[in-house]
Each structure stands twice: as C-alpha cells, then as structure tokens.
Picture 1 (spheres, rainbow, N blue to C red):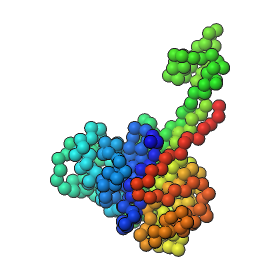
Picture 2 (tube, one colour):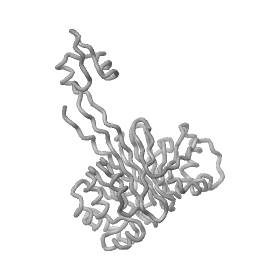
Picture 3 (cartoon, rainbow, N blue to C red):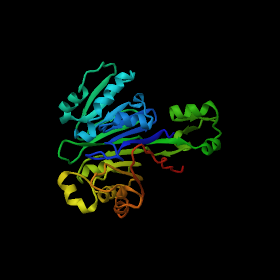
Length: 313
C-alpha cells in the first residue's frame, strides 16, 4: 500500500445515488490520516474501504452543507467507541462553530476520544512538522474554505557523490545531522556537495466554490488536486449562480496551476451514470482544458499521490 494515497469514500454532491455515496476522502500521508468532508454514510464507507477509525489523525471540513458534514457525528462517536488514543483536531470554517458543536453532540454517547475543535479563517496556516496545512476562503453560499498540504523542500543524499569523497559508514549520519563533515586533511565537506534538491510534495482539496483567486492559490503546483466538478458546460450558468465548478473549469484550474494529477469529484445526480465513465462528457470536457492525468473519482477508489519529482544533482 502506498504511504501517500487518497482513499475516496464518496463522490456524490447534494443527493447520493445508487452508485455514489455522499462526500468523504481520507488522505494517507505517511503516519497521518486526514479525513476531508465526511458526508452522510462515511462511517459505513470506511468499513468498505478498510479504513480504521484509528487511522484518522485529523479532520478537515470545508463547509457545513449536509453532504460535506452529516457523517461527522458518526465519525466522532466511532473515535470514542474504538478508543482512539491520539488527539484528533477537527478543522472547519470559524463561522460554522455553532454547527460543529451541534454535530459533535448530535446524540448521546460515551466520550473517550480527544476531539479538538480547530476553527480556521482565510489564510490560516499550521506547521505540523512533516507539512504545513493552509486554509483559504472560497466563494459559495455559506462560509467555505479549501485546504492545502505542503511538504517542505529538503535534500536527498546522492550515493555516487558520497563515494567520490570517500564518505562511508557513521560519517554519513554525521553529515546528515550536522550538514558538514571534516575530512582527513582538514577539508570541510558540506551536505550540499553530496546531495540534490528534494522538492516537497503538495496536495490540494477544493470543494463547492465558484472560480476565484483562492482556488488557483490552493492548486498551485499541486502533485494531487482533488476538486469539485459538479456540472457540465451546458449548466455553466447554473454553476456560477450556486457557487460551483464545471468539469472544464476544474480542468482549467489544473492547467493554469501546473497540477500533476487531477481528481474530479462531487458529481451532480442530474446526469446519467454514463457521463462519468471514461467515454463520457465529464472527461471529454475536462480533457479539452487539461492534457495531464485526470481521474474520475469513484467510491472506494484509491489514488496514489504521484511519485515526487526527482531533481538531478
């Protein structure tokens, strides 16, 4: 199993269908598991996907429309039922705190897990060590934000360069920890001389929004972009009216932002199931805007975060 992957739990928009559950997405990122927008039925979808409650280390809610949050009570209660030992922060737009409080205690249960409310505002950023998590305000009928995960750039050791300088064994560890090593003869070797840049990876999650600057900022150079594609071009006027994107608009965002892998989701129930298949109009209209990799999300699908870009020494 990939250490960095997206587990798709649901892909419908306002109304679930026979083929699509309400929203739900778990991002596995090394030891982290971030659950985005747990809609109704998320807990059951987790069972089908083989996702344990203990895998959740954080939750991000974009807004408090039901298809993005009505699964939250069940997930929170499951954390306690399974006695998840680690604290689980729940991020959500600050203006929706009242809705979060209602959902958190929607019914009686024995609370053992530590759930930490963590409201966000436009531009909010948290350094979580392995990555930073950022929220940006989007354009929708209620307060909505998108999220971006950014891994810091680092460097990777190049074995051939180590060998060229005769560095072996414990000396390699010293060089990695301190960034420098004194060689025989007194010359100081720096880490930069035996390593190459290791660009950090980026993930973006954009739901329920009209086009705005924040969408492009979130998607900027994302290795994996998960973005709503609620409508087709024929309903572009309706999309603009209700604060949603078409498949073509989502693909345009990917093209202009330099995205590597694009995941389209949050499909309206108004279209036939065949429109979401490889030969359907969602892919056709998106492909006209973006010639990179496009994934049409399906329930219980897994999508790897692309292998990191390798920069030569």
